[in-house]
Length: 542
Image (tube, one colour):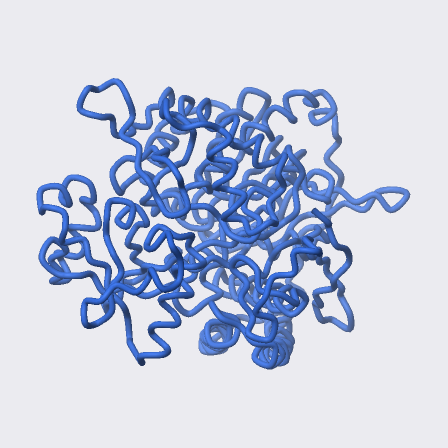
């Protein structure tokens, strides 16, 4: 299969780019499940931008920099914030129905943790679903866009040219029906595969979030940065039947408070912003309260608001809690922290270009410099649409060279002497080992000894997984397992190399910040004796 632009992922980043790039050539969007299965579809809070008259770009910039703990790229922050308002208008022109005030003129803007002003455009607590609906409607029937469900990317196609030049020219893809691996060649490949929350035992992410793009880019030789900064959302619903269900930060923005089992507030002990402190602060505070008191969870109390208000402002959350027997207007909601967002990823420039020629990376898979050491709430959807537009503008300015780029001959996929995997326990056992190891040893609060133990265990697991990868025919589960194992190792190595506590990375051995040495650690692959190794190759000083 050949195309001009191969987009891997059908969330807000991938579809935003696809809709714009379709003006330039053929676009093929591939998603490993159904096209609606994306983290975007689960986003509750909204998208942050300076729209209100009393708000200013400088305020949003300052809030983002403060949240990022000194590791944001200031120029990138300025660029993204400056473009925010226009990208919101783009979404509205596309048909996204953000909530307006009763007057019908102005947007009803929410406020979330870390924000100094109301600037979060939302569709109640269904913002991501509404954005995804509008984008899929726009893509449907577009003559230059083809969307292929149940197509999982396995690895990137890298063409080695003369003089050591390396270029990404597409990807090997595993199609489910019929089950086969084929090559899709492309003049430009765009990774929009989302995050890696499934690396951890508890996560707010959908099941597809297995770090596929990050792992593929790493194997292709791309530079990776800031992988130690995993954001744990403070308030995931704690209930045996509530898999991955998030209680939006917007609930705290509307006045909810965190309390212990006796109904006592505790956030003031940790930050003068209380419940509206940044996510890293709130998550660590909850983690500490739970560990010190032996609690299974804490509680989010929004009984200060009426049932009428809660039904209207948070229809999804209200209905889900109601289904589980939790009446949020009458009783507190049990919550725990859960892995939520990867602030690091594949290093890209201001156009979304990675260090591998022909490979762009957008959305959560990318490390743009916007988030630094901790993402400000509702900046992720903003980043996705801004960088999708920047990537399109780059392609538009260079379209002649892109379309003239010849597609080289590539090898067909060869399974060699591989056989069918008859026992899925080989996959499920290692999957469980990885996620429990990461949760227990590489979680919200870290320690060097635990990180070293995790690294040793991951080496053994990686070795076994690579052996399975060579010996058995591929399945989507095997591809995902291989990817989360590599992403886990990157997180561990990055955490070991940061000898300070900053942002989302808190390590007991180095509890203080080192403000004299603000930098990103940059890693690349090393393939040694059939093993993938994560190697520190550079530092980016801010």
